[in-house]
Length: 81
Image (cartoon, rainbow, N blue to C red; front, side, top):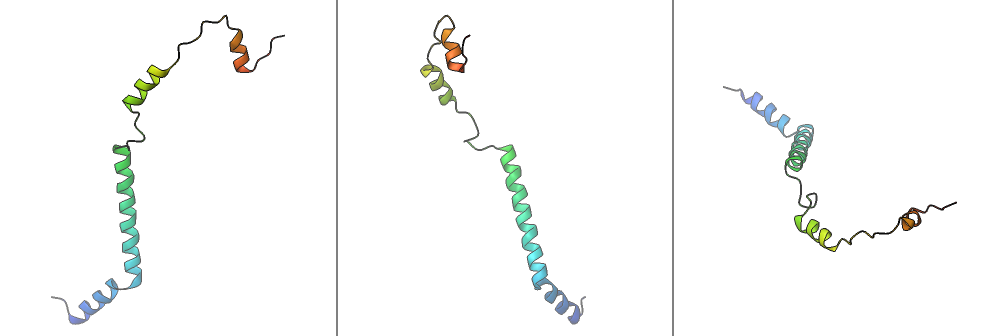
């Protein structure tokens, strides 16, 4: 099918440094794209809000104080004239 010269040239081309570098770059690009696609479909656990954190925040949250509103200006750093 192939002549002997054709097989030798084909082997030399495949073992050249340019072809090897290009193949490695394409492989790394494909791996990077797959990694980003996987992250966009399945976000990590640190990105998801945990239900237990919400429950703890609700139970430890202090009830709002029923003042006349004098402390609101102090908290905002506003002065009365």
